[in-house]
Image (cartoon, rainbow, N blue to C red; front, side, top):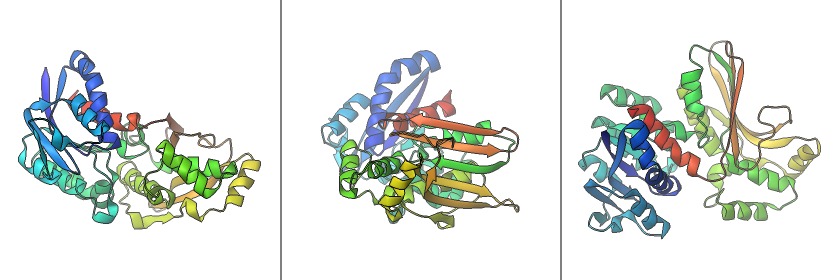
Amino acid sequence: MQIVNFLLIGLGNLGRRFCEVLADKDPLLQSRYGLILRMVGAADSRGAAHDPAGLDPAKVAQLKQEGGTVADYPGAGRRGWPATDLVAAVQADLLLEASPVNLKQGAEPGLTCIRAALERGMHVVTPNKGPLVLAYRELHALAAAHGAQLRFDGSVAGGLPAVNIGQRDLRGAVIHRLEAVPNSSTGHVMDLLADGVSWEEALELCRQSGALEGDGSWDLEGWDCAAKLVILANSVLDYPARMEDVALTGVIALGVDELRAARERGECYRLLARAEREADGAYTLSAAPVPLPPDHPLGRLGYGQMGVVFSTDIYGVITAIIDEPDPVPSAATMLRDVLDIYS
């Protein structure tokens, strides 16, 4: 039986649900993979907890579900203990980094936590887009220099293994075109608008369902879609893309009349991330709302669905779609990445 001591940073939608998944899957991990995942530390925005003997993931999830903080974990928690200090001080084999994206604040604290973990030789698994968008090449070089692995399949399109398919299953191919709908909330908003719902009503319905957080600008202005395209470009296309390389048009620039006219034509608008390969091997990158006909591989995506299409030279056209009505599949990608490292 292999014991892996890990730290978990971020206990929001993904981190909390990962704790629930781990509590549920622990017997399977032991019987099928001979693996015990022991949480020796965890942190949220209000503090942290540390116990070398292990924190109970079900207890951590309960604290967060009740609106509390892991800093209140009995006998192990401390309010005001920063995640960065926890990663720098505690001995562990693995870091799971699931803090908020925070691109406007330099992707912190995620970026500092990931750097520190890799420098200490820890493997890192993260669904956090921010550090990868800002420092993809640096972090991979750091991992290689310290003999660590950096996995991030959950950073694109929730539970859909878009990165894994592109990196593993399309080896040896040239990808002429990549198209993805890596964000389901914007499609839901556009569908509601096409149904005749007002902007205000559409946004409120999406907030109530959990599809949008805060004012929704990260999604609606297209930043989330562009960030995921940057990650796909770097990881799958081996193209050193940055956010400024993406021609970006958000959903908020789209007129309601356009959405309703597309519906009448049998088309549906989706915020589409696209990479087109040019003759010189470079890629043109865009993220924009596009009317998709029903015969397009992504033209029938419904609520909670995301997808990716790879058009290749030797493997034909490969499409993958996920139906993700809640954040559990996104959280479970961390388990998938951990198993890739240890099993």
